[in-house]
Image 1: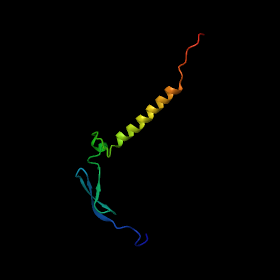
Image 2: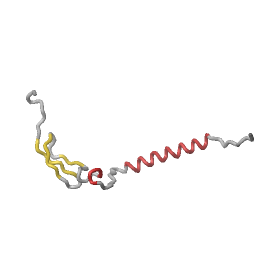
Image 3: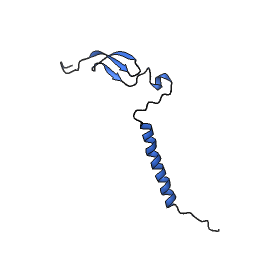
Image 4: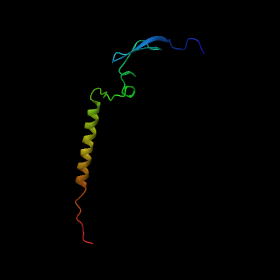
Length: 86
């Protein structure tokens, strides 16, 4: 290995928004994270909605408008077909 090209490796603490603290070694000192294994739904088995800034509602509104526009366009383009006697 070449000398002096590797980053410094420190003992640090990761602090989660839930209050959980994890002591690890990293190149970054004292990192604050939003979600950890103590509060993540995958690890806890609890369904918890993590929505920041209303992203789910924004997604739903966006695709609801697109769906309505498509339905209106299809209804406008498709003329009513009258059945002819066979």
